[in-house]
Image 1 (cartoon, rainbow, N blue to C red):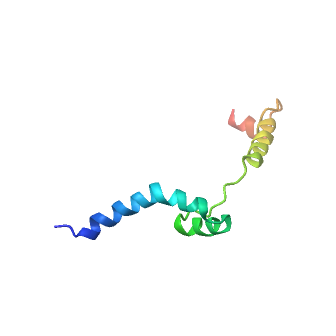
Image 2: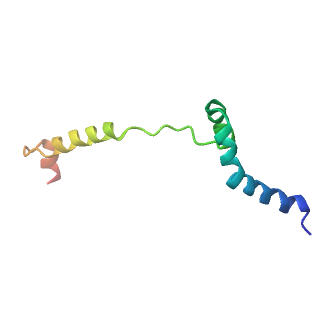
Image 3: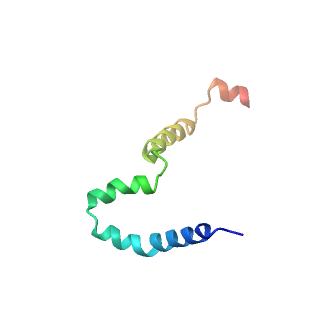
Length: 78
């Protein structure tokens, strides 16, 4: 038999998070919301690198490989 809090608490938390919390956040100052969000909803702190740097590097490699000159390495591969 499952205890009452094991059923009751998840249901109440779902109701609170879905319906009540958005209204509470509207009345809280923005400073409090910015403070509480990372605590209530932790996310991964990894920063995603910019794709601009990667595309520049790829562009340099493509222009390097697109030359018509044959080097010693390409002659060995053929």
